[in-house]
Image (cartoon, rainbow, N blue to C red; front, side):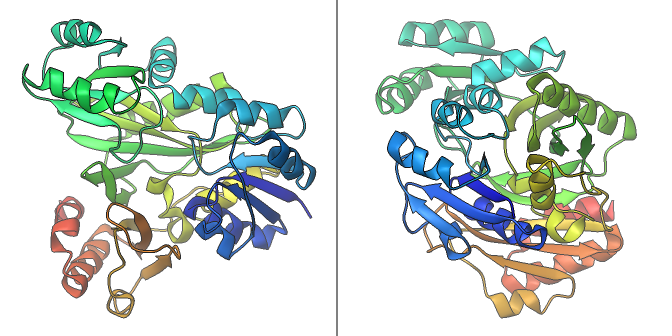
Length: 380
C-alpha cells in the first residue's frame, strides 16, 4: 500500500483520496484547519505549513507527497523533497506561485501572454499603465486565486485606488499589472505527465466565470482542431520544461484565433472535475497514477459533459438529481459567500442531449442564467 501525503486538506484532497481508494492508496493530509473537509474521508494532521517539526512527522508517515493547494510554501515543499519524493516538484510549485516567473516561462517557451509589468511602487504602477494602457488588471504577484487579490483599472482615476486596495492592504506585496484581454473564449488544458515523461491531455475545456470564480465548464470545447493542437502543445512544452509529474491545468484566452496563456495551476483543477464521470480515467486517478509511477489512464471523454460549480451554498440535491445524467458532489463544507461547496456534472452522449439536460437543470434549480450560454453553445 502506497502512503500518500497531501499538503492541503480541501475538496481537491478529498477527491484525490476518493479516487485513490481503488488503487489501494492510503492518505494523510496536512492542513492548517483541523476541520478541513478532506479529513472527512482520510487522516488529517493540523499544522502550519512552515512548522518543520510537524513536516518531519508528516514525512515519516508517507511514501511520497503531493499537494492540492498551490499556495503551500514552496520552501516547505523543497524541505520535504530532501526527505521524501514530492510531486510535482518544488520548482514547478514555485514558478506557478509567481505570476511574473510564470509568464516569463511561458514567453521563453514561445507561448503568448497578455502584456505585463512588475509593480513594486506607485510610480511603477503609473509607468506600467502608461506602457500597457487601460483597461488593465492589477494583481498580487503571489497568493491570488478565484478573483482574489485583483483590481480592474478602467480609467486613470483608478490607479491610486488600486494601489491602496492591493499594495497597502497586502503589506506592500509585490504586484503585477496585466493588460485586459477582451477574449472570445476562456479555455483550459487539463493534462498529466508521468514520472517516465509519458504525457496525456484531456479534451480542451471551455470555461465561464462569475465574479472571478469558475461557474461552468463544458467539455469537449467546440474549437477548431488546429487551435486544440496548439493548446495541447503549449501544455506539453510547459510540462516537459518543468519536468512535471502529475496533473496540471493551463488556462488560456482565445482572441482572434490566437491563444494567450493566463496562468497554470500545478494540481488537479476545478475545470477538470467533469472528468470524474465524463472521462475514461478522471484527473484525480491520473494524478495518483502519475505520482505513484504507474501507467497513465485513458483521458478520452465519454460523450459530452458540463460541470456546474456550487458557490456559497448548495442547491436542492433532490431537484438536481431528478435530471437524468446528473452526478452530485457535496464537499462537506459549511455555506459561506464565495466558497466552493460542491459541484454537479451532467453527462450526455451528444451535444444536443447535453443542452436538453442543462435546460432541465436550469429549470429545476432556478439556475437558467448559469447554463444559458453553454446551452446556446451546444445548440450551435
